[in-house]
Structure formats: structure tokens, C-alpha cells
Amino acid sequence: MSTWRVLLVDPVLDDREIQALVLRAAGLDVIEPRENPFKEAVARRPDAVVVDVSPERPGAQEFVETLKQDPRTASIPVVVISNYPRTEIVPTEGFVGKPCSPNQIIAEIMRVVTDRKS
Image (cartoon, rainbow, N blue to C red):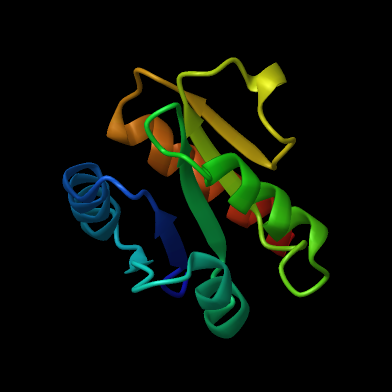
């Protein structure tokens, strides 16, 4: 397996840093967007996008909608981490409900990327 690139989108810096450490420890190449996560997704074409969608992350749900509607990014699998019920989130390839463990997030990323590549 080559290293999979994951775009990690979470505006809460502390949360993003912890998630990035966990994903890197699992052998994933983590892309942290500098400014505009959508432009980063278009330019970098990650193997998956991980997005935290919750009340304290305004705009996250709209970001996911934009990814899924744009032909340049629609095929990139998205894993949503959220304390909302899955039925209240834009449909995506992956979902992990909060609270969750790092292993659950990594397993879901592996599942959606493997499904896409097979």
C-alpha cells in the first residue's frame, strides 16, 4: 500500500493537531489546508477528506456539500466526524459518531479509500 493522502478539515486547531498526530501515526499523509480547504482538495486530490461537522465548526456542512456537488471533487470519499445523527448530515461515504476513538476514525478512512480503489 502506498501512503494515502488525507485532507483534514477542522477549524479548531487543538482538535486538528491531535487528529493529525493520530493519522500520521497510522501511516497516513495528512494535508492540513492553509486557507481554503476546497481549493486544497481541488489542487491536491487527496485519497480522502476528513471533516468534523458540529455546532462549533460553522461552515463544515456547507464545505461537505460543495465537495459532493463539484465534479472536480465529488469522487473523493469524505469521512464526517460528528455529534449530529448521520441522518442530519449531508450523505457521505463515511461517518464516525462522537465520541469516538482514533481507531474508529482510522478504520473508517481505510474502509472508504479501499472501497474507492476497488
